[in-house]
Length: 397
Image (cartoon, rainbow, N blue to C red):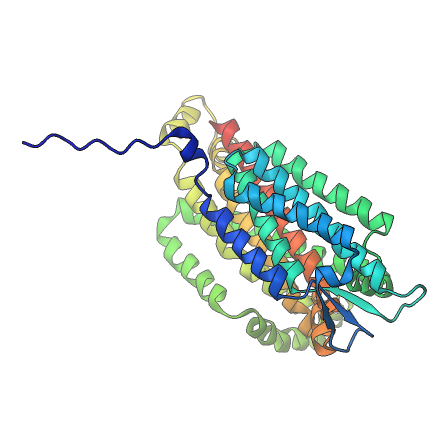
């Protein structure tokens, strides 16, 4: 019998210097973008195609080299550093340098008093932003922060962004020019977007929770209920909006009081109904699944203490199943925030109005004015509800 072959000795220092695979990939993509794509686009107005400008061509030598040094530091940290705090610090330094560079580009390329010229971030900026964002996300994941820390990090990001926008740091960029023109309408559509997403979710929860409880208590109903809701879920959103337009228009014609309440064939009504229908399946399924995972011993102990069936359901079963139910609600809220965008096609309003108006006018800056807040809303909802679910799970444990 041959003796086992010993594994080759790898010095600890060599192990620490081994390149990080994700860091190598992000650095390679960032370098290709920086030297192969324009950093900003200079446009004589919001419609005309932009003239590509590189980072070195726009910024003074000191500014360009300073930004390059910060990006090089972020790349070295991404490739060589193992400590999550160093990786996060490098990513944040790169993000700050990138933001200052694109803001300075807007200031330099915009003539004083000119409100027609547009300076838009180019492909290099967006790719570098994505790479640095992924590096920061990876570092935060490695740090494994608690729910409160994650919420505080999110709040800190929005505070910094709010102060930067209030200071006027990015005022000469094209997206902010579009905001200046549409500021009043922007906040109105933002509120409409949030109202549609949250209102349809709230109505769905009121219906889906009892349905989920019924599916748990009467198992033979579960296949039929979940199957029906699954069929609704498979219908494309724009098709469901169209299907609902005719019956809602007929309802508004037959009953004037419904029209007075805002029920019409186009507008917010078909959007809200469609979002409500889409919201049912995740909440019903997670409610039934969460109740099914509740320990029978806990239920029997509650009955042994003299609690009624309603008290057991509300105080024990639903409490223990709440993290699973909230996971379904998180899925629905993020889904609804995205789907409200499509509702703009039938007059539902929301931030999607900027997206489709920008597409129709070939004004990509107007598209970004709607798209960026939608992404921010979805990300914020996911982080907050994930943190809430984790807190509840820790409390239950």
